[in-house]
Length: 196
Image (cartoon, rainbow, N blue to C red; front, side, top):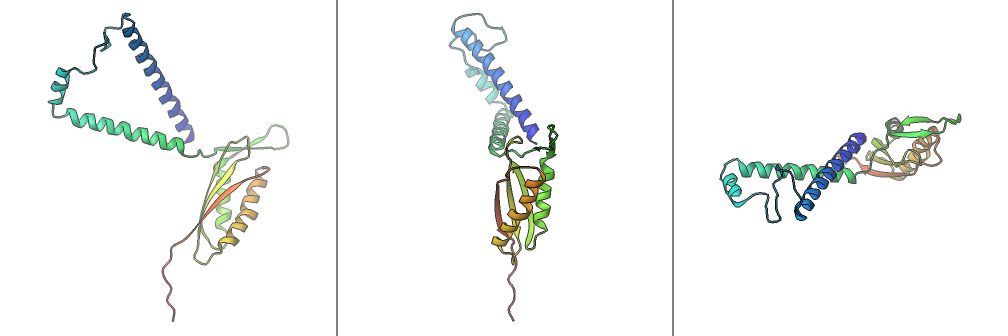
């Protein structure tokens, strides 16, 4: 997903830059009274994109306004998706491990996340765990964990065990100096118990 997002970013930025460069160049050429291509809609400083006649002609068609509104809505949704995807923290795809031979090794980030999740879920009182590695692969990555606790679990004991066991094992197995973590706990919903 991160590679796809990076590719989309590059394509969008390149396309936007090319369009702006061409449009700016032609507008500059029109402003300085140089010749412009015959297909370009602007040939002078008083030209508009759609004349009044074009607006009335297209506005009278039954399909015109729904198509314009749908096109703008699609552009808005795509722009919003792109903006929100930029704000999300990227998942770390791999971690560089010092193997001692000077070459180093790469560990898939998802494999390390799965190890953290499984080891955390093995603890008593943990219903479910989700882990996500963030940061850069050459520097010390960080872990963000969401842990769903069963009703009888002790939050303090769970955090201590996750820090002392699951996170310590992940840090040691990847040969990291440190693995800072943010652990968010949430209690599982349960029905009321009857007292007799």
